[in-house]
Every structure is written in C-alpha cells, then in structure tokens.
Length: 517
Image (tube, rainbow, N blue to C red; front, side):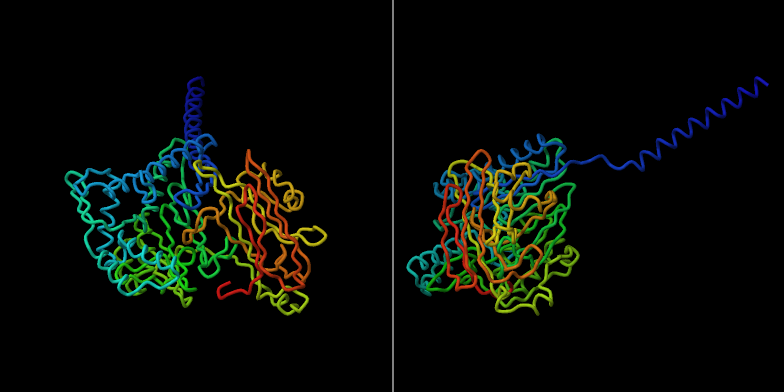
C-alpha cells in the first residue's frame, strides 16, 4: 500500500510539473507585449529655415529628452557641414576656397556624390548649380521685370558645365568653376535621416518621427498618420488631399505654392528647370514615399520639373517608391501602389440641410476668413514654439469656433487663460498619435488659418458681429492676447492687427474661396 501511495505521489508530481510548465508556456504566449513607451512631442521654430516637429516614442520622459538632444545636436552638426547659408560651414568654405583637391568629410562627399548621381538619373532635372538660375529670377523680381532670354541662356550654359570632381580613393573634391551652388533638393531629407538614426540609437527609444518643413522620416516600431496638404488650399487647418499610414519610410513634398518670386504681378515657383532656366509650373505639388529619405527628397523636387510621363519612368527605377502629383489644372496623378498607403479621411461636408437653409442672413459658404500670423523669431538661440490658440466668440462672448490649438502639455493650457475659461470645458485630452503633415516648405513661424463660417457643430453661423481671438503664451515667457471685433453684416475689409512680444504680425481678410478650398 505504501508503494502504491508513493507511485501515486510521483505521478501527481509529474503531472503537477507538466501543468506548471504548460501554464508558463501559455502565459508567455498570451501575455501582451510590454509597453514600448509613449509619445513625447518637441517642436521648434527656425530649424533649417523652417519649423520642426519631433516625436519620440520612449519608455520615459528622460529617455525622450536624451533622444531629443541627440537629434538636435546631429541636425546642428550636419548643418555645419552642408549649409549654403552659413559662411562658416564646410560646404561654404570648400565652395569659396582654393580650386584644389581638398579632403572633405564623409557626409559632404556622400551628398556631392548623390548630386552627381541624381543629375544623371533625372536627366538634368536636379542640379546643385540651379542656384545660378535662381539668382537670375531673384534679380528679376527686385527690378520687377522678366529676365531676358540672354540672361537665361547664359545661366543655362553655366549650369551645363561640370562644377566639381570627386576622388573616391582619397575622399577629395576639386572645385572646377565659380558657379554658385546650393545643396537643396534632398539635403534636408538627408539631415533628417541622420538625426532620426542617431535618436533611435538612444537607450529606451523605440521609434522616432521627424518633420522639418513638411519632409518626414518615420523610423522604428511606429506607424505615423501623415496628412498631405492641398496645394490649392494650404492653410494649417485645411482638409488634406490624402492621408497616409507610414512605417519605416520617408515622405517628401515639393511644390510651388509656398515659395517663389513675384515678377510683374506674376508668381513664379522657386523650383526652376535647370535645362531651360524657366520656373517649374506644370506640377504644383509632388509627394513621394520611399525607403530612402534622399530618394524621397530628390524625386519630389525632380517631379516638379519633369513631365508626369518622365516622372513615372524615373520612379520605376527606385524600388518601393510611390508618388502623388497634382498639376496646375488640378489633375491628380498617382503611382500604382499609392492607394495601398492611403487611410480614410473623414472630411466634414456641408450638409444639404445647411445648404438649403442658407440665406442672405447666413454666412455665405463661398467666403472664408483668412487669419495670418507670424510668430516672432528669437535670433541666436533655439526656442520651442509657444502655445497658441485661435478661436471665435459671438457678441455675448460665447464660444463659436475653435480654429487652432497648438500646445505640448495639457497641464499648461491654463496659462492661456482666456481660451481656457472659454473652451476648456469642451476640451478633451489630445490624442498623442496626432498626425503629421507633409507639404511644401514654408518660412519659419509663418502660419495661415481659415474660418469657413461654421460653428463647432459644423453649421453655418448667421451674419453678425464676431470676435477673433489670438492668444499666445510661452513657457517661462510672456503672455499675449489679440482680439478683433468684426461685423460680418457689413463689407469686411482687410485688417492688420497690432503685433506684440510673441506675434510679429497678424491680419484677417474676408475673401472668396478659390478652387480647391
């Protein structure tokens, strides 16, 4: 009997151990993965001449700040190598130095090599010496006259020359002429890639998203929703023309709608065709998604210059590259795999009920209020963008429409006490996965917003007196509030609003909507 009891105990122990092992194995399969971190957002003005937004997915705020510092230091380092605007940069010193074979950094050598590659691959649509033509158009804008054919022919002849010679054995570059050069097109994307790679290598960081002036890189364990700006309706709060879901890729957009030259009342793109000397005007926006940041940046610029048929051929030479073009006629041209990247856009639409109820007492849906503001730049130091709120109240000071809210930490929103007292009760905590936006690069600190005459419910308001509120608060800085009453029952004329310590300038203008708006 004792032997039987021993045998039973042994069997029970065996099954108990097996059961425990099975439980452990099952637990290892069904237990959800450990939390990989949360999103930390950092934004700055006047980085590479535009605005920067950095998202770091990290296990702690401290780890995120370390990654932030690493990324920003890498941007500064790369800018000291590649900038054509800094006379002390390596590129500028080489450009203005003696015409002899000079040993240069691996980064500058790589970028110059890439320009050689893309000059050939794009059949001349990309060229660092396009700056020669750009200077001709800038001079024409100053005297408000179109450049002469002789000026353009001379510039194009200069562009067609060979401007440097690289020696891959000893990493030297020889300057061959005096043509002005500028490393635009894809240098910004190259810098973003370097900064993201450096940040992602930081301990405790699982993903990084960097957006500088509308060019983005997404690296790591994260999918970013990226809105593509409408080039015909390019305010900060305009609905996008597309929404993309992007992981471990780069996105670049180039277009003529934010920068250029006004010559004799005619707008000309800052993007020029190096082969003809003329501004690119057929394609007004090109967005490219690619595995390589430099490929995305180069293709986006080239696609503004090339004919769509040429762009399709060039894109086919880059594995996994997808694109969307918008022509000056408003035609949308997509690569075969573009749709697979798109997400659904929930764009509010004016309902038939609202349309049918529109009368002369209601806001005209064909009009909108443009609100432009430029934030002051603090030269010599890098600063975060301040908290900004723009909203509308009626004559009884009741909230009508929350137009824009830019902030980092909700716990500091009460520093914008006018907005806070008016809107915070309706405010829900922002989604930390808030999307990024790709668009043509705009100057740092300059923003355009629109009010389409609808309230927060999406209904057209009646014609009446409304107050535009622009409130700005900076952490450890000043607080500013601009208000302006506007009577929409009368003819509304353009209004310039007084600036202050945070807002360099602001204006409002009641205008008719153009196509695409």
